[in-house]
Every structure is written in structure tokens, then in C-alpha cells.
Image 1 (cartoon, helix red, strand yellow):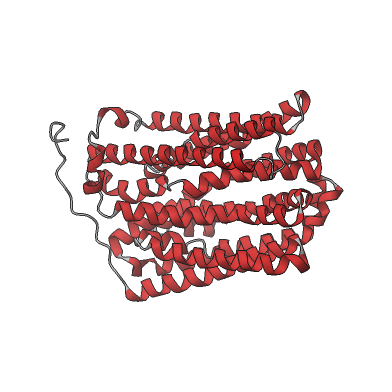
Image 2: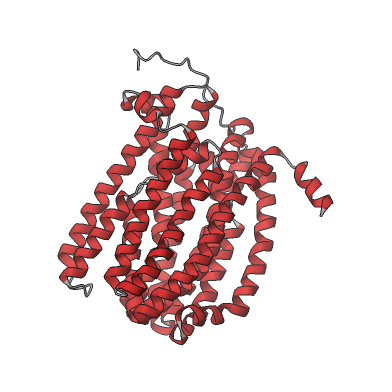
Length: 455
């Protein structure tokens, strides 16, 4: 153990920073995983497999709209904010923050409009009563306006991962409190939707309070006039914002598409079992997202200083660790997956075991290649990652339509696995090409800090 600690202390600074950041995020997500099992057990046993399927479809639709239209403003802030911090340029940094908030608000408004149109014209087809449709719309509005991406980006830019972990822990904690309260007061679908909406609002408030604590909140009001200048301050930001938006939106929305395919093709009961299996396997997906988010600031700095070619060692180290973790976790899922499904949801949910294995396999593949997309994005080639995800999503949808007639919900899960494998292969080929090409992305030259009059 002492030798291991000594080796860690002598590791490259970037790797130590990544592991420290990951540690904070792991603590937060570990708490979330435990709490999610408890509140899922409460909901599934209160609503039953079919009722839980409806709940999953409603919340999944809201998440899909939010992910489909949302810009990855946290990633934009980290990518371009590093240079402004190095130049001690608060005006440009403040403009970047304001532009990110503006993007978040525009995305939220677009999502609300889309939700209103869908519910107005298709509520009957979705099997919703007028009361439930209204509750669903209110839930969508609250979720879409619970803006967290920008404050999360500010905290990660400042390396305040401990604060970010504390803020993110609010969501599962509040969901658990809400689920317990609803169980005793009004254990119906609308009650759980209200609890989820309140949890989203309070979690967003926790993120902004954390930003205020680190001192960057005042920048939004004291500096950075003329937000339009953000395009001149940050060359290439528009293309970067659009490509990361398309790629990540496709990635996150694709996580919800299988649920809707199961619900539409096999019914709400199958959707409920599929959703619980997906939730359990999602802990692996969340693990890969944590590693990617923890590593992204260091990857950006590495690319700026040494070019893409300097990333090979870091990527290989990440692959080795992730492969070992994935192998262990998949064995545990195979051994105890059915037991966990039936313990959390009841005996009716045991039918999701095969689905769970396929989804866990897909999550393991994503975990192994977790460093690929952040490295491609840091090299300002996010459009290539988007194309890879687009092809993989097409494979998933096509595979689902082909396999559902013979395999049912398991066919959709198998298509999700095919999606992950396709995506991993394509992202790997892109990264190998960039590393061999050895492109160097130089940092922007230091610019004089503008006076307030000029701003």
C-alpha cells in the first residue's frame, strides 16, 4: 500500500489532478447510487410495473427534450475559460459566462415550446388524461429551467470539484426525501412528478449558491459588458458550441430512445422493467461520464501545451484502469443482477435480467473508451465525434426495429450494445488518426485586458 501511495504521489501532475477530481465526483455519485436504489424501490412498489413505466416515459421525455436542445455550456466554459484565467482577463471570462447562461435560457425556452406542442397534439395518443398532461408540462417547464450546466462549468474551470460534488449530491438526496414524503402523503404518479420537479429546482439553486461561494457570481454583474464580443474573444466558439451540442445531445438523447422504443413497441409494463434495468446499468455510464468530466480540464491543458500527440500515454492509462473496473463490475452484475432487480422492484421486474446484462455490457464498452471523446473535443474536432455518434445511433435504431419482433425488450438492449461497440470503434479510429497526425493546437496569444470603457 505504501508503495502504491508513493507511486501515486510521483505520478504526473495531470493524472493526480484527474484522480483528485474523480474522487470528489465518485463520492457524490456513490451517494446518488445508494439513494437511487432506495427511491426507485419506493416508486416501483407504489406504482407497480405499468405505473412505473408511465413515470419513466414522462420523466424520460423531459430528460430527452432537455438533452436534445441543451448546449454543453459547462464544456464551453472549460474549453475557453482556461485561456482567460491564464491571462487574468475577467472581462472576457464574464462575457463567456453570460453567453453560456444565454444559451441555457434559449435552450430551455425551445424545449418548453416543443413539450407544449407535443402534449397538446399527442396527449391522447400517449394515454394521458388532461390532469396528467398538465402535470407533465409543468414538470418539463421546471426541469428545463433548472439551469445547472453553466454553474457546473464554472466550478470545474476553477477546479472546485468538491463543491460541484456537494451540489450534485443535492438531487438524489432531495429525490429520496420527496419519494418518502409522497409515499406517505399521496403515492400517485402526479405526487412523484411534483417531488422530482421540486428536487430539480432546489438542486439548481444549490449549484448557483456554490458559484457564489467561490466568488465568480459577481462577475456576471460587474464585468463583461457587450456579450456579442464573445465571438471575437473566443475564436471558433460558435462551431465548438454547435458541434459539442449536437454530439452530446445525441449521446444523452440516445439514452432515452431505447426506453421509448420499448414502450411504443411492447407496452408500458415492459418499459417499466426496461427502465429499472437501465437505471441499474446506468451507474456504469455515470462512472464513465465522471471520469470524462474529471479529465476534461486536464486534457484541454495537455492539448494546448503539447498537442494531440501528447495524449497517447494518458489515454492508454485510462483504458487500462477502465478495462479492469469494467470486467469486475460486469461479473458482479451477472452474479447479482437478478437479485437486485427483484429486491428493488419486486418479482415482476426479474424479467429485466437479460436486458440488464446487455445494457451493462454496453456501459462497460463506453467506460473502456471514456477518454476518447474528451480528447477529440479538446483537439477541437468535436464534429467528428458527432458523426461517430450519429452512425452509432442509426445502428441502434435499425437494430431495435430488426430485433424487437423476435427478442422483445431484449432486442432493444442488444441494439444498445451494438451502438456502444460501433461508437467505440469509430471514436478510436478518429483518435488514432489525430494522434498519428500529431496536430498541435497552440494556445491563443495573450491579449491585453480591455478597459471597462472599451468593454
